[in-house]
Image (cartoon, rainbow, N blue to C red; front, side, top):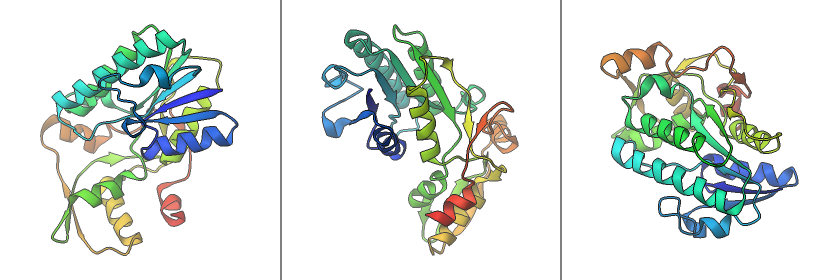
Length: 249
């Protein structure tokens, strides 16, 4: 089966391409590097020729509401239109657990818009929501450490390995077809504070930094401290744990 992976050079996308190929699929990584631009639609039609399933794990670096919304709206509209023209039977979209409760955050509201536009589009869709990745604390540390101090938001999370999310996406590609909202995905837990995971990541990498947990203000802050980002009871839990993943790096 031919699979196009939008955002195929990213953290999750690289795993999706590798896993799909290992399972005997013909998987192609699509990104601006390969001439495919979801924002403008350039290169999409040619990239989707003969493709059975398109997996969208693309993202934008901006977390501000307007640029994030513009990116995900354009991506959803162009992907649906191109898939319809090229006869792609199934679109799979990676999203985030808990975003319904956190629409005040611009990036999460933009992801909800992406979900809605895909689900309302002409091509059948499976939306797979995952919790934050095991890789997330390290990414935060890399961009949030200044003069030996790492300041990160105080969130309660239950992270999952990006590779485990990729395996679930490829599983969905090999299923009987679109399911709408699929089961949410999370790691086996237990839930942990994000600053603690950042601290563990830095220690594992032999880096010295003072980690400060920053309280997010208002109702949103209370929500993320109390578990708004945690998986629902019926979520699909897959290993490894954060600790086991960190040891194996």
